[in-house]
Each structure stands twice: as C-alpha cells, then as structure tokens.
Amino acid sequence: MLPQVRIAHPNRRIVLASGCFDLLHVGHTDLIADCSENGDMVVIGINSDESVKRLKGPERPIISDRHRAQMLCNLAAVNWVFTFGDTDVSEHMRALRPDVYVLGEESIYDGKPELIAASELGIDVVISRGKNEQPYSTTSIIHSLQT
Image (cartoon, rainbow, N blue to C red; front, side):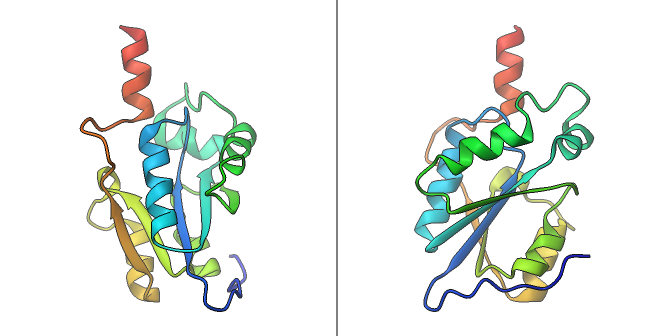
C-alpha cells in the first residue's frame, strides 16, 4: 500500500493520466494535450512491462517501460512520469490525490477501478475524445504493420 501523499502546489491543478503508452502516437499526444488544458501539472502513470504483458499479451510492450517513461519525460507538457505494476492506477490515485483524471473514451467501462477511486475521492474526470477523425491505438498500428 502506498502512503497517502498530496503534492502541495497552491493554486495549481494536478492532472493525472495513465496507460501503457507503447508506440507513442497521436491518440496519446491528444490525451496529453487534454491534460494540459485541464490543469497546470501533468502527471503520467505508465504500466510497467509486466503489467503491459498482463493487459496486452506476451508480445507487448514493444518499447520498455524505461524508454516509454523517457519519451514522455521529453514532452514539454509532461511534468512527472511514474511507472506502476498493477493493471490499473487506482492505488496511485488514492496516494497522489490529483485534482483531475483524464482518460480516453475507449478506456471507459462499468466498474473501472480508476473511475470508482475518482468518485470516492472527489477527483474530476475528463474524457479525452481526441481531435482526430480516426481513433488511434498501438494495437491497431501493430495490426496494420503486420498486414
């Protein structure tokens, strides 16, 4: 269990997003842009390599968690990146207590642990719908390369 921590930044809204972020693409950057639009400090949680394998299968991730974190850290809009080993980030949400949680509309389902945690903690939830006509995903990119 993580200790409860609140990043103290008076008058700043902390925004959290999470995911695998394997093969960084426009869907990811749209999500990060939505994070920036909804707060002052963007925190990204990325699934560890083992967590990605549990979620996506034994052939994933394509890029290691260390390098995925480095890519995100190099984006000007991102202030802080951490890696988590669970398949969801709800425990970290409870520890960090962000003001806003941003997620893609493709990630919404009943009983999603992050949505439950956000509701219990009073964290605002923003659904990122992306700015592109076609939804992007690492899985669809991989499939298009294989055909």
